[in-house]
Length: 131
Image (cartoon, rainbow, N blue to C red; front, side, top):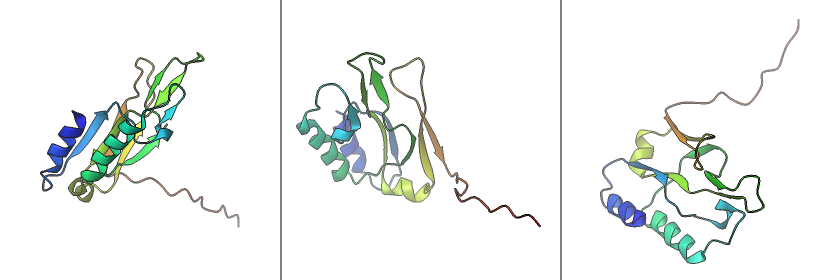
């Protein structure tokens, strides 16, 4: 159903939009650590939907995994189930858009912090001069 909703939204390319939430599907085998292997046919279906709709992903800051189960157990699993996607009109309006993956102590899903129009300081350090 999520894929149908995205395809429906993509039919209105003039409107800028972003969709953030738990899609409960993976885009790549690298989106999962531990547990049973994820079915390839599900990977392809979700990936095809994103490509068909010409959606892009924002820069993610923090852990790539957004969901976990069984911490401290042999059956520990981490997955990237939560995501954000936006159309090209959104990225034109908000070119500086960041998605922060925060840590949760009360849920198996990490919360997102959605921030736009910020810039980060340069990583280059200024050289100290002593005269």
